Image 1 (cartoon, each protein chain N blue to C red):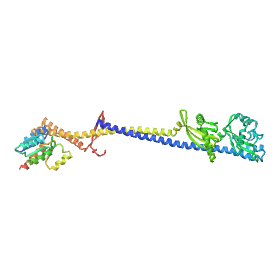
Image 2 (image 1 turned 45 degrees about the vertical axis):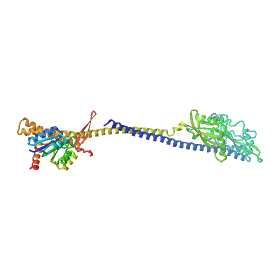
Image 3 (image 1 turned 60 degrees about the horizontal axis):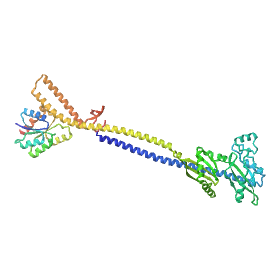
Length: 441
Length: 125
């Protein structure tokens, strides 16, 4: 086989392998984009759904609280104030089933809680907790003994500033050891003059744990009020994101959208943006609860890029292994083909050569036979050594003739050469009398 | 005495064949190629009684020489010699021409000489 043919075969193999590699690589990148796109899309839907759910739950929690205060205001005219509080507070049982921590109170125009205020520590039957249990709870919740703010004059002021105002939701307020927020309804006399307000004070941490925390496993989340007070940040990324959000001036815009949405009867506004956090980029998804609170989930863009990466890595590994196997199989096939073609060429050349040899040998045999027959003719009847030698020579000549005929059958493809292994670089062949050219083994 | 022309490019064959024919009483002329044979025909004043033509010759082959002899000299007493009878193409041509032939290696005592004697006797009485 010529060097050119050898090079062509391997070039073809290299080309096929290259094309296969390109196809696999193209598939990998296409699939990567597709998987990432699909995974990200699915992920975004999940995040948005979760945020919508939180938004609704926050909204419900706040409005439930406001509804309670409004109900209590209506009942103040017919109930004893203290009795009202006791009855109402029975509904606000702390999740441990034995006590509540925050509570409701009636405040006067001076912003102080009236004598009817609940110490916020009663059991589910409305009875004061035992001193021992109260002591244990105070250890666990250091603010428990003093849950009330010094003054709620800001609530009174809000209602005084806006006589038509029917409810109030405070921003997050620092109380001893915790952040709280206040919901309130105005208490007015029949002439509409403000007499005070019924407030409900809730620990923001409590609200967070009741409404949101269960769904935050592995999520970077932050919660902020309309003034930028950070209520919750689940991790460092969330803190950084919240600070960046505040610093960017996006908060007032989000709250303005939230107010507008609330006026249109929605829970609030929502959106998403990309944040540059130092060297990292993050995706931020946010929702407002009216214009009071904003809850946001933040995700590092690099981590988002890892979505579906495991599947892709597996595909990549499979593609690579497939390519290697393909290359190995192609290489082996090419090598075998080259060897087979080489042997075919050898056989073809050999066949042609046998024709040439046959012609030469037949002519030579003509001479030998002529001489031999001449000698036999002239030495007819010789029974000596020469006569025996001539007889042997005739037998040898006939054997050569048979050999020539065999070569001619080979040359004509009437018998086939079969590969008989290698001796060094030399291919060996033997005649296969049952194997005809173009036939089968 | 019959004259026989032998055309073969193998000197050994020419020599051996010539010796045999001469020993059997023939007059022998030889040529190593078709062109040489044509030249011999052009200058001879006596055509052979038979021409033994090897098929494989340098230049024109034995079949072409037979055609030339027939066309130029109206000579057709040719007998072919071949070492290629095993070739399908050669075999078919020989059969088609319906001329006698000997397959090499030549078997003088048992095939060639008896045939020639019979052939020449039939041709020339």
